[in-house]
Image 1 (cartoon, rainbow over the protein chains, first blue to last red):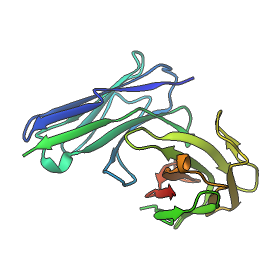
Image 2: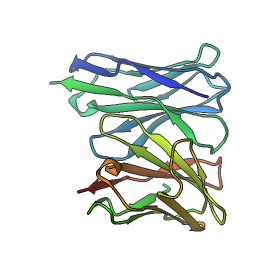
Image 3: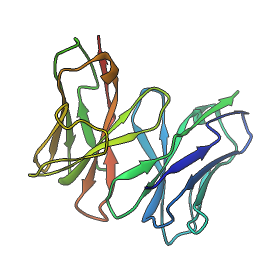
Length: 112
Length: 116
C-alpha cells in the first residue's frame, strides 16, 4: 500500500526566504506526482504535475523535482511571499487518471 | 479550463438526517469520479471511486451503507451521508477524471458538512 509522507508538517519563514518542501513515498511504481496548494477551508489548486519519466517541472517561482528510485520529491518556492502562505500537498498516482494518494501536507506561513 | 462544481459548498444538518452533496463536471464528461474526506488539519483520504453506471468502489473502512454514492450520468456524481452524526462533520472533496486528453483529474472546491 502506497504511503506518502511530507516533512515538515509546518514551516514558518520570513518573506523573501526560499521554501523547501519534502515529499516521500514508499512505492516507487508511480505514474505521476502532483503538488497542490490548499488555502484554509478551500479546495485544491494544482501547482505542478510531474510524470514518472520526468525529473523536474518548473512554473514561475516554483520548481518540483522527482527522484522516483529513492521515492522522493521536493518542491522549491523561490523568494517566498506572504501570499504563499497555505498548505501544500503532494499526491502520487499509480496509473493514468487513477486515484491519488495524498501526503499529510505542509502548512506554510510566510511572515511579512 | 475544465471545471468541477460541488454543491452545496456548506451545509448544516441535524444529527440523524441525511444530506446529499453533488459533484458535477461542467465542460467535460467524467466516467470516473473520486470522493475524498478531509478532517481539520489532516490530509485528504479517499473514500470511494465512482464509475458511471456501476456501483462505487469503497476504500477499506468506509461504510458503503452510510455513504451512498450514485454516478448516474457522465457529468454528475452524488454522495449522500445517511443518518449523519457529528463525527461525520468534515470537508468532502470530489475529483473527476476527464476522458481526454491524458485522463487529467480535476478537483472540486469542496463541501463543508457540519452535523449538529
